[in-house]
Image (cartoon, rainbow, N blue to C red):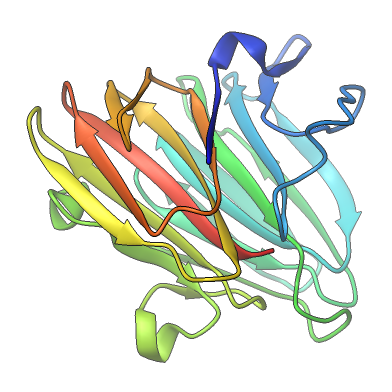
Length: 233
């Protein structure tokens, strides 16, 4: 089963510095049919204006993965972490027992990113943050693990859930396949470009909610960039 989530059907929020679309219920957007997808709770498509950002605020018991599509985002938290994550790269914040952080666009241009929240396998634990580079050239024609519950096995940054966050870039005509584990669901979004997922057409920034499929096959109609999560039911 694959359910297409067209970009123009997503929840919306806008103020003077943030233009956001919500794949799932979030903030003032509530859709009882879109409360999450397995352990995936939030997938926000955010455009943050220059000098805009999220002032210091708290989180607990959530794995928050940020995939930067354009520009860069600068992180600071009460643990003393500070860093800048650039386009194509990823940061992970494991909120654990509690963390307070800010995220600002300190660039001269708009920053666009995906913010993905995954429920942890258990609550509590020491909060943590890290970022890593994932050059687009190393993802050409293949799915690369960006974050995982077992980085020693899979690669990528550590998240506290038996899940994977994967990314790929495909040229027109290329395809990539991924076996979906029994008892798991997947959610996929195209950052740029057009393609098909098991024959279902997607445009840039559309989503696809996937379950009960043995194989997920993504074919590029044009050059595309994609992010996909695989999470337990």
